[in-house]
Length: 155
Image (cartoon, rainbow, N blue to C red):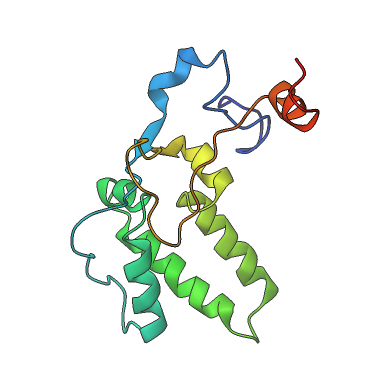
């Protein structure tokens, strides 16, 4: 049986920040924060709509697209885009939303999907400015440091 139990998502998710994870440190792939560079691949399915074209362009500029390109997942991404556009319609079946979420997980578009794929997006260096409209990455602090800040820093 594969590691992790009877189901693919059973057990705790891997934590790249865990103190005792040096044994699998090489298993995580660091994705470039600036996203995938280069031309967007051609649409592999039939008759692309305007909404599909918009999502296709946006997705292929994301950091995860670096891995999709490496693994030749253009058809999987296109199917995700097509199902997402269908799920956006007001009369869409509820189970289509479930399928879209599952596809997003497998493509690493969600936080659980990123952890399952063991992908991390690199942190921008200290001297780089945060791009306009993006929230800066805030480093986690310890509970003790947060309490010290609240109580006036008395210790």
